[in-house]
Amino acid sequence: MELDDSYFMQKAYEQAELAFEMDEVPVGAVVVIDQRIIARAHNLTERLKDVTAHAEMQAITAAAHFLNGKYLKGCTLYVTLEPCVMCMGALYWSQLDRVVFGASDLKRGFAFQGVQAHPKTKIQGGVLAEDSGALMERFFKNKR
Image (cartoon, rainbow, N blue to C red; front, side, top):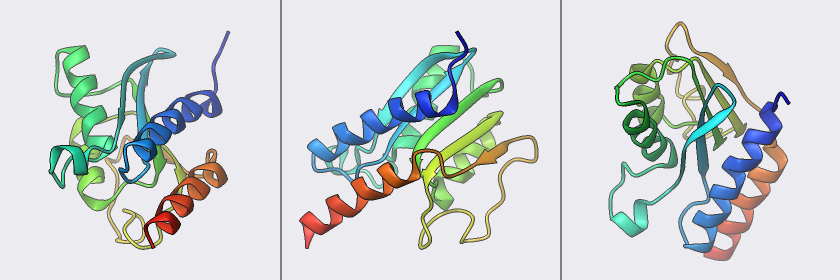
């Protein structure tokens, strides 16, 4: 059975829910190769006291360890929020085949900031965007 982008984004969303429960900004990510999830991650910036501990960064590291290599060719990253400039830089170097994100980030997202993905990386946004955006809104509403 061929699994689709919605299926894998749902798995990333489940990671975002874990972050929400931990009082972390609710962003979740999974890395997939050949229809198999090889890495699951969510934001850990508060817990690790590390501004670089975004979901994407955690997922890249886990996937690289799984594959025993620094490049993630043949992989797709699913992430619930459009990657920031830092994360897109790391994604650029990891040479993923695809980056699929949920909600757009009109303040800190890579596209708004004018950052380009690796020329061989395909970008797709808007997968489960409403759910991901609503979780972010709920998180920040609780903070106010």
